[in-house]
Length: 192
Image 1 (cartoon, rainbow, N blue to C red):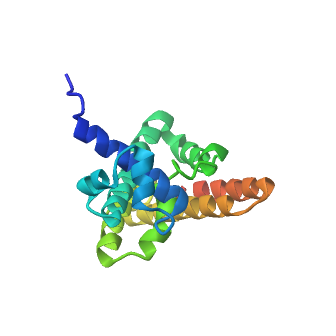
Image 2 (image 1 turned 90 degrees about the vertical axis):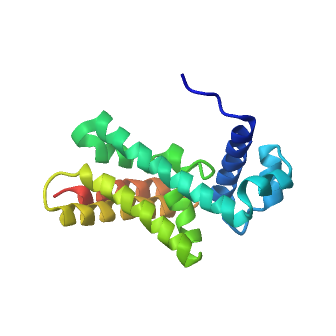
Image 3 (image 1 turned 120 degrees about the vertical axis):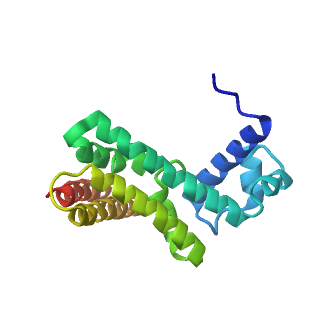
């Protein structure tokens, strides 16, 4: 039997969810503590009690967002078998995911924020990305571990870049074309 989360855990989860949506949709600079607290239905004091600072909330959001990817990759591999890369690419570049900044992938929305962050943030991000790439590589056939890792980096880089570009254009037909091209390239990059 699992225990129900405590009120404190529920409050932290609400704040983390509100912070995640805000950072993903508005970026670090466009997100304020008061806005996060309001969206979570708590006071700014409660926010600080749980995360200490805006940076602390961003760190937690980034870790949780990347953990979502870490948890989802094995699910795609199990559910779709040898077709998992195509299924993952279809989901990742699909219109629903492209149009949902607030709940979309942390790798795409938060990587530019990490690029401007300190060394500790870079190191934490690198650790999570290495885990993601390792999971992808484990699901690829053929070649040495180094070759599979290189293909995994190429695949995930193509997906992140394709999602970023497809979100940045105004014309839906161009966005769909970018997504389709990135999907094809990501699948090709993953193959031996």
